[in-house]
Length: 65
Image (cartoon, rainbow, N blue to C red; front, side, top):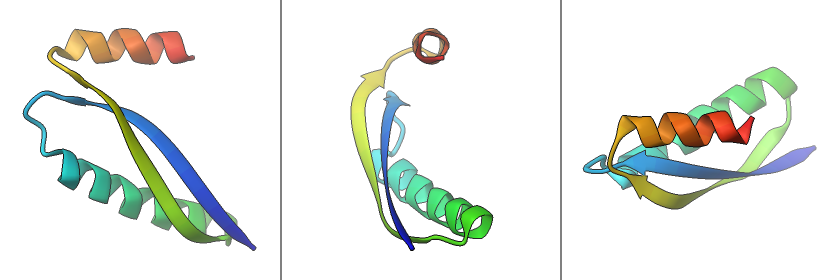
């Protein structure tokens, strides 16, 4: 069986977006494959915004729960 994963993220200003996305893709792929045995065919990362403060990210993550 195969899986395709979509992630939506907000990154901090001055964070290297390309590196963050690449690390997320690698870490999520490895975690899902090891935990489920599924073959991950793609991990799509959509950057939905850039935050200028840590507080904004905490506020957004608490609303998402």
